[in-house]
Image (cartoon, rainbow, N blue to C red):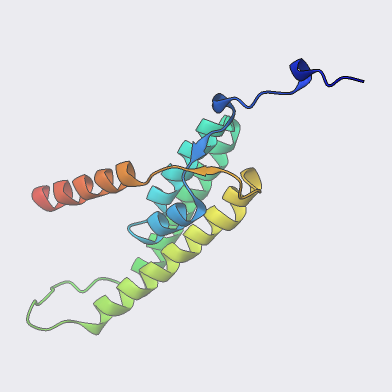
Length: 146
């Protein structure tokens, strides 16, 4: 019996999709906000063909960010006057709680949504250079217009 070389499937370079890694989504969720992490996850879902799953990520992100802001602003309001010579401990508490909340949002995005649609760790990670550039430009623009 001869081996027919025509029946061997060829590996095509177009069969894989580069996506942002779980760590990238988690990192961008913690700093600056889960909105950035969800944008990276949405780009992954679109690239992999899970366009119907985007709505669930968008709904979760909106509800989470609104709830986070309502809770933090209700229980830990920003001081009315910020004195640069005296750092208010309330600001440090608020910043720390905000980071913890962002971590929780990022963990949900990565360990629920990412794992649900990308259960295997056999993907090709996409470079985070462009998201970092966008983030830096947005930070500079908000600082310029603030």
